[in-house]
Length: 343
Length: 82
Image (cartoon, rainbow over all chains, first blue to last red):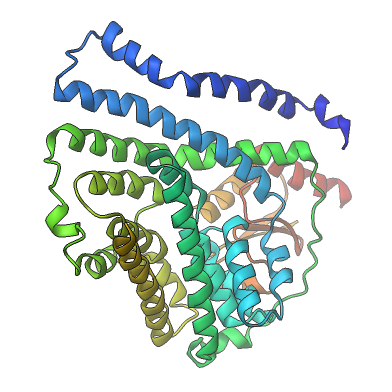
């Protein structure tokens, strides 16, 4: 351990901010009650009071969780780069490769606009097609925002179920795509592309710089998603008091077997980031949708998106895109049915 | 100095190009800036995350948009070498 770190401004700021975060977080409920009951003096029984109380409590809670966890994820991610991940996956065969790729898909920094160079970089340097797919499925599906929001609104069990089933889908779907030998459905030019010499050596990063990367991640991600979280929770708060309890039961409830495939189909063209979809899912569940159906809907919205497929169409022929959607969509449906059956 | 901004047209790539042009203009740096959109050209630099900044054929930034200060440092340091 290098004690130099204690002199870094970044590190000192983090040390001060952590307890401040904790004090605010544990006092959110009393603060909310004080604000609603004493400061505003609102009517305790009214629907609007309940809705406002829900929003005033949930919104800061979710934002606080996002800030803390994205900060640490930002630091963690500074240890992973696309190049290192590729090196780890080169020449990996079958199942082990799919498992590794799915796990690395969670932690490697990835933005969907880099999907094409990443795909080319992987396939060209000998990462098998199926293993590449495991990465491309896991990376968007199991993202930190989705997991944090699930944890914040449903608790750790649902978050864990989401991670577990999402990983399984990425591993198995990638493995199947590998077994099917679909290289013929990759655009010819992909294999003809020559990678240049890689002359960019890994930069040496100090821990203080990694902390900066954590702060940057918070600024970038929370700065982008807070508005979706606010809207999602506001919709949730509105539905809280006003929409009847069993509103969604007939459409997305357990008894309707077709609800799972229907939710997946509706979710594919819908494109939303996790921040917008989780609060909506929480409303669906509260109003009578079953957990399996709601999870399937959420996964379908996040993991299968039209814009991403349009990007991937540049490197993949249509049959491969359809196979990819079919296998992942099928996996999501299985998850939906499984959880409707268990719970 | 020859500056290339690599990116297929995502929002981050545009903001990197814009920031680079600003820094070059503000500091009177003698440079030609080209935007590389073609994926085949981009892959010749063997990068997997965009956007990327290339100065005289060498990749100096990839997968992120550096701050104005960092950009200034990257671009002006080069001048001292020349």
